[in-house]
Length: 223
Image (cartoon, rainbow, N blue to C red; front, side, top):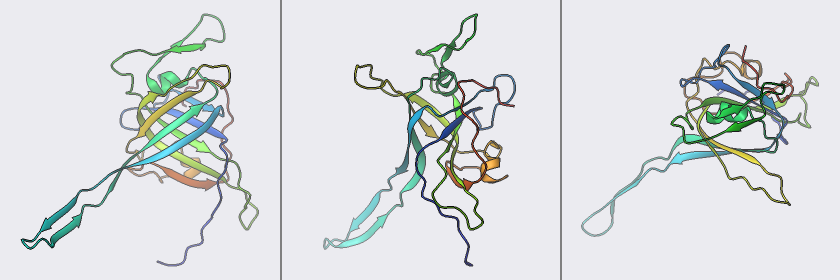
């Protein structure tokens, strides 16, 4: 391999996350029925890669010594994401958990949510992007880059434990699994470059000078 100039950084903090509704194939839903949230009210996003452990096959000779000692390689299956929200944005629930948004006749209309034992409670599909703070290092030309993370396809989401007490903030926790990304997921093009997502991608990271979108307590339609 020829020498390649690389751009390195030391990512820290979390600035903005964006969640976008997808269909079951990992393609963005746009127009009617779409949903998108941009917010900064989270405390952490924990990414836990999951692997299927391959078996070790051992066969012994009649004298007791090893004849066959073979390890089936471990294989990556998916990432498990745990997201802790300190701001309870009602739009997160219909987007991530197929919940029901509680609405009123007067503004604001999205005041809460409902969850239940519906058959599709974990069937929602969505993507997640996260921007981190500008790094201390800059490129040689003086350009500053945001660390950008993208999980282009998530589903199988569950709500984690919540504690209501006099000493701690009540957190809203969402736990979800990644699925194969689609090359038709184009939301990340301004931050990854066009055509960078290929079928089967679960997680992407990049450094990009384009600033993240501003946060707001709004459930947007996707253009």
